[in-house]
Image 1 (cartoon, helix red, strand yellow):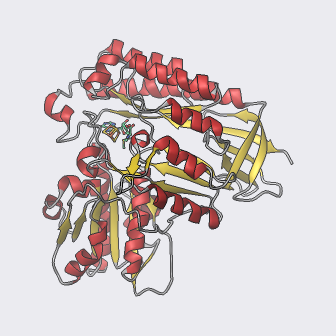
Image 2 (cartoon, protein in one colour):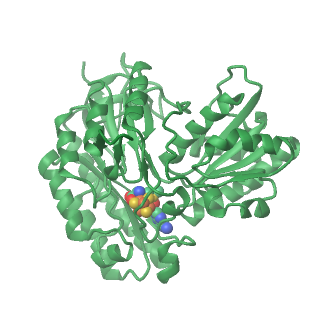
Image 3 (cartoon, protein in one colour):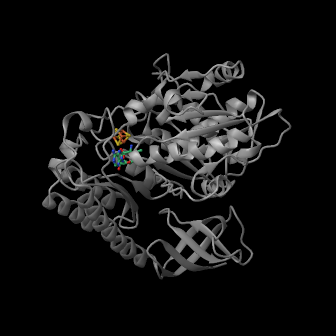
Length: 479
Ligand code: SAM
Ligand code: SF4
C-alpha cells in the first residue's frame, strides 16, 4: 500500500497557496472539460484505495452532469475524500476545511462534501462540528451521490454512511484521475475482516468482499486497449481475495486472479498490494515466478518484530511465522525480489527490548522500503478499548527515528546490490529535476533516473544502473 500522505498545511499561507500545495501532496482531480454544466473538484487523502474510490466517484458524478476541475475556485461541488487511519490525517482535513471556508464565502452556493473514512467514522456529527459541510458520504454509499446532491440542491444537508456487505462498484468504469497514462489501479476487493487492534479500517470500510473476477479482467483489458502498461490490484488483504459465481460453478482465489490478469498481455506489468503475512500463500509466490510480467515486489507489512506485540496487535502471526514467509519468498523468488513493510513504533506497552526486536527483524529481512509510523490511538478500535496507550510520545518518536534510520541503512544496502546491473524500467515521465532525464520504475518498484535519449513515457527501457542513493537508482539507457 502507498504511504499515507502527510499534509502539513502551514497556517500562514493564503488559501490559494495552500490549495496549490495541496495539489502537490494530495491527489486532486484533473480537468475533464467535456461541456458538462457543473464542475466537481475532489481532493483525495490517504491510501491508494481512496484515490481509486475518487475515480469511481468522478464516474458517478460525470453521469450526473459534472466535469472535474483542478481548480477549487471554479468548482460547484468540492469533495474531500478523507482518511482516518491516524489522528493527524483527520486534523489535516479539519484544517483544510478552514481554508475551504474562504472559497465558500466567496461563492456561497458551493457544495462541500466529506467522503471516505472520516465520513464513516464521524457520521452526522461532522455536520454539527464543521458548519460548512453540506454532505457526508461513506465509502459504500457513492451510488447514492446523485440523490444526496439533489437533497443539498434543495437546501438540505445530506448524509449516507450505510455500509454494505455486497457493494464492490464492479460495474462502474472509473474515470482515471491524474493518470500518467502508463499505470493504473484496480480495486479487487473492499473492506477488511481482520480486526488488527490498532486499526480503524474495519469500522470505516466495513466487511471484506471480493469483486467479480470477470469485471476485474474486463477493466484490465480495457486498460491494455487504452495503452496502459501497468496495473496494480488493490485490496487491504489481497491474499484473502475469493470470488465465487452466484451459481457456485466458479471460484477464483488471489493466485488464480493474478494469473488471469497476467495472461492478458505480456507487455502489461501486474503489481498488487497489500499482502497479509498470515495469508500469503506459496501458490501466489509460484504464480509470480511463472509470469515475467508479474513484478517481483511484495508489500508485506510486519508492523512489529516482536511476537508479544504482534499478539496484542491481533495480527494473528508471530515473528517466526513472518520470517518463515520471508524465507519462502527468498526461496521461491530469490534475493532480488523486493520486499517492503509498514512498521508501527511505540504500540501499547511496547518495551525497549521489544522495539529492538523490530530493528533486528529489519536487519534480517533487509526491506527495500518501509512506511513507518508511530502509534496513534483511534477511537473505537480494539486497542483503544482494551489497551493503554502508555508509551510516551517522545519515546514513540525516538523509536520511530531509529526505525527510519534502520530502514535507510537497509534501503541503501539493497540499492547498492542493484548497482552494476541491468534493469528493465517502465518510463513514467520526466524526472522531477530535469526534462532531459526520465524517471521510471524497475520490477522491484524502485525509481530509476536516466538520460532521456530518444525514449519516452510508456517505453520499457534497459537501464544499466551505475549509482544509487537511499531512495533512487541512477543509470544509463542501453539501446
Ligand atoms: N491492510 C494493510 C495491512 O494490513 O498491512 C494496511 C492498511 S493501513 C491503511 C496502512 C498502515 O497504516 C498499516 O499497515 C499500519 O502500519 C498503519 N496504521 C494503521 N493504523 C494505525 C494507527 N492507529 N497508528 C499508526 N499507524 C497505523
Ligand atoms: Fe487494518 Fe489489519 Fe485490515 Fe490492514 S489487515 S486494514 S491493518 S485491520
